[in-house]
Length: 271
Image: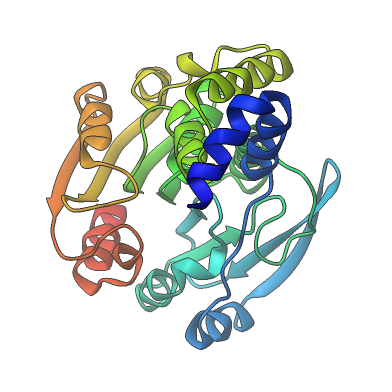
């Protein structure tokens, strides 16, 4: 009923509805962390990083000389990686993670995937990490950041699901809000004017062809309802250094807490 109403309003007030969709696109909604996730964060050494208008919460877990940077997805946060963090520390691997702009325990405000992307580049350069793990839309931010900073060299990069096209995020918001195609096109034009780039050209399958990554691994559940596995398959086809593993029974979010997946990631990072 709500989506039907929004569909009617989209026809009557396209500018207003485009503004609502823009707000949804730039105002991440964050879920509360589980007790275990908070406990893992409490074990970290915390640092605040000034980035544009935000105070970014950065977390360090110190173990061995080998270090991994974790990049969460849109509307995710560092604590989502808690099970992986515990396993990495058991393997004497140090971990750095962060909450993106207006995510988790970082300061709040209107933001965008492009600010998130810029921050990823800052983090990789600042901490000189050569091993990465991303989840979901964190893969878009990371591959775009690396494609814009081609001097950055990465040894191992594991992606726990990844979208391919940035416009899929726009279409996801459009479905959630219930706006019409006409309003969605208006939203795309607004973004294009702001970033001076055609959003339709922002595809992970294009970014990965420019990256200096020695080895990559994508793991994706066949029944993922948030990001269809076809998107990861296409990224894999365009990325010669990447291997691809299809799994079942984890969905989009539980993949971060599945022991078998965590072991695959840890093994890959140690190769």
